[in-house]
Amino acid sequence: MAEHSDKDALRDSLFPDLAHQSLGRALTPEEAALAAALSAVYAKGTHDFAAVAEALTQDEIVAPRSRRTDWTEALLAEELAAVNADLDAAYEANGYGA
Image 1 (cartoon, rainbow, N blue to C red):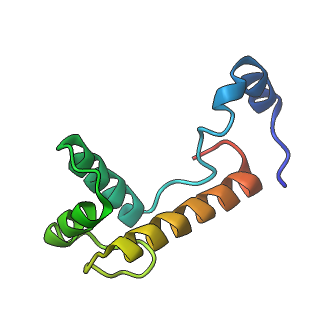
Image 2: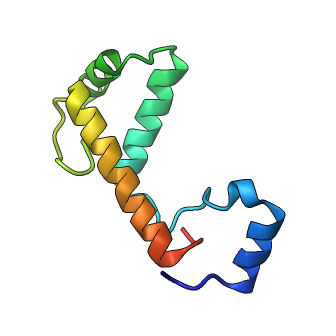
């Protein structure tokens, strides 16, 4: 695990509930596009994974890991889990900093 700087330690002590809100690396362009697309879909009131997957397919959003554009509920769950695990690993390795 990477050592955190004094600045990070101070931030953790002042805002313990936000200690893991920073990224350990920048989002890839595909991850950022997926995040923006999900925000747009959710903003329209769509929350059902099947409907979200359909919207991502219609918008031809590229899956960050598999590079697929034919979204399904299973693919959505897999991609979100993979991105989350990778971001968790980057945070563990790098701490604050994206």
